Length: 197
Image (cartoon, rainbow, N blue to C red):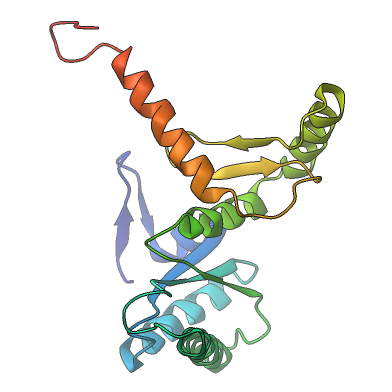
């Protein structure tokens, strides 16, 4: 976390400049391994920098692989989540960020929960989200649809959803549908230098 950060577009930032430009900080923790001392110390170091240079930065923790082999029972999953929340909460308090709002999201490699979690992070950062929700509400009402949402096809992140939506159990279905759309689109786009279609 020292020195400079070079982005793909060639621009270079110091760590502090990069933190000031961020809208959210996303930590991914392996639920099966928990949070060890090195990870907690890394979070403290980042937390000190956030407190000094970007105190309003949103922090999200993705507790990933929550349904792995080591966490078969619901009790083990809840215990793993609680352990991550307590340990990371303590690390944030140690660096003066105890009052910082931290959102925890459980995710799995076997379903669309990772897309749902990242979608929540992105949605919170979108200044147009309320307007997009109103637009989708009007669209649903006028067209008589049950629900509507705006998704990024490639990343499978949903940017907005109408306020009439009945829950979030659609991530897997939408993810599979978007995969089919991308696969079909690839059939009808040019491939290679020969211009085959």
